[in-house]
Amino acid sequence: MDIFCIKAVSLGDLEKVLISHDGAGPGSGWFLDKIVIKHKEGEEAHEVVFPCNRWLDEYQDDGKTERELTANKHGSSMKTFLRGKSCFPTTVFYTIVFPV
Image (cartoon, rainbow, N blue to C red; front, top):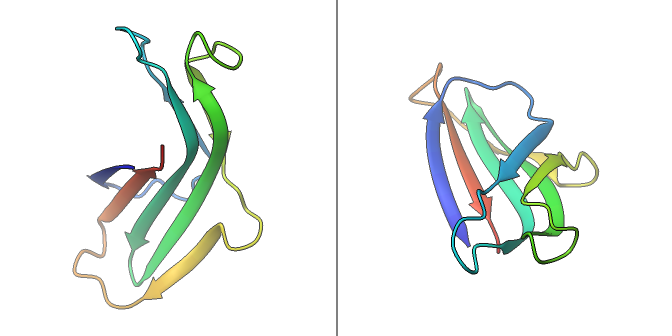
């Protein structure tokens, strides 16, 4: 699992993400199960899941190294998971999780 933390301005409701790699080097392809983005804005924190379940590899699956993923808005995949006071009311912290 790879985790990236990004401090940014609010991106609003996330509906799609575009993920890719340049395919450079041997064995550069990888399988992506999903992307989980957790973000806190104001008093609420949210989690958005972008399912993939595909290869990003020119020699696997359909040969694509770029995918546009759409948020799973059903069930608990898009949810508010924390309520509390924020020290940074105008700043959003995004945690991006890649379970590979």
